[in-house]
Image (cartoon, rainbow, N blue to C red; front, top):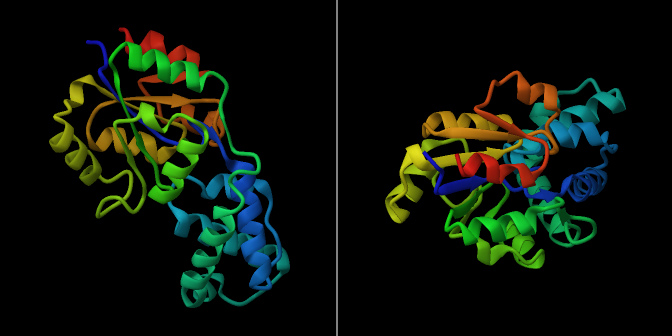
Length: 229
């Protein structure tokens, strides 16, 4: 059965955004007297919400500084202020180098021509999702844009699917989740629906292949072959 609905992740799937995220994390840490972290730390933390990203970064920062005190206890005491500052820094940083992956604009136009309904379901705050997609010129291609703060719970919670399916009369059997992370895979399983994982994104391909998804692609141009099946 051909797919008529696609639920896209954003970071690592539609947009190459890791450099700006990493830069903002390091700047936020520095303002709290913590050393910077390796790009791979931000890579691990992306995809499960801001708090998970910052928790991962603080733990790595403590380790690199040789600190023996409890990183998690520090984070509990400072998480609100750190998250607020990260969001402020990221708001002015994401335009620096965030771009769509090659072929995304053409792929979205093709999906529109096929009358496939496209949605974004991200664990990035909704405001950033909307601003980034608008800046990159593709926001109008999506029926709805969901961020980590759009529903009562974030991805991979089935609450998001319940909201979208009821509001837009979506059917699981004609829906596919397209993403680059474990949260996307889990989201599809919770719906349940088909899932396509992209090997060009933020999560290492070997991590994704261990999940045994229904489909894998190495470029967004390959998606049309899956949709038309």
